Image (cartoon, rainbow, N blue to C red; front, side, top):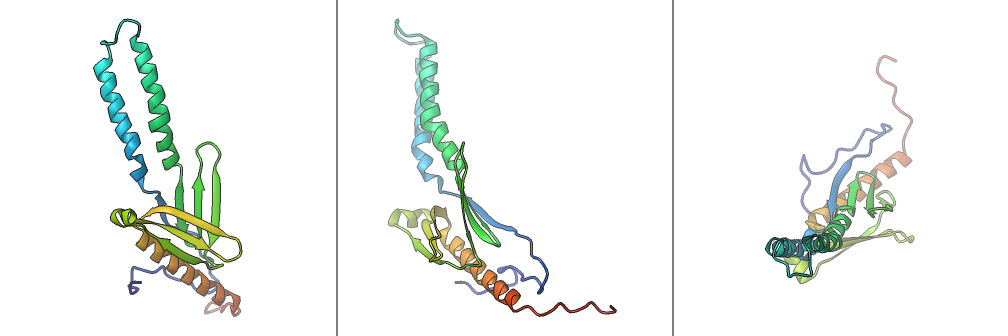
Length: 184
């Protein structure tokens, strides 16, 4: 863990002052799984460009274009949409995983409860600077963040957020009555 500096950790609000929830980071899974769809898109574009107008007699150009459209939809557009619809959001109060293109699925884990963070990185993941984080609160709440880019930085952010939220929860639990403003 790095040493805190003046810009590193979030400032703690004064006791008794409500702190709005702010987004710290929003990431998607690493886009390495989109390599094959991108390659298929390039191949389909090249094949359509070559065969358009040069098809043998029983085939028509509309057949080529419709087949290419179906392949692009199934192999390129759907995987990209699935990738774009899956996000991990870390706020000052919780971690949120949301996914799904038509039916949204959302899973949350609050920082106040505290959780263990396990980081797993294989050799290929180390090359790409990505990894898998498993957050487990010990009470049945488990959240797995797969292929997180810059996983070490995200790990440090999560540790800092848990620490700050637990300090604030402890401080608010032992809160003293508010001090009246001067002149009141």
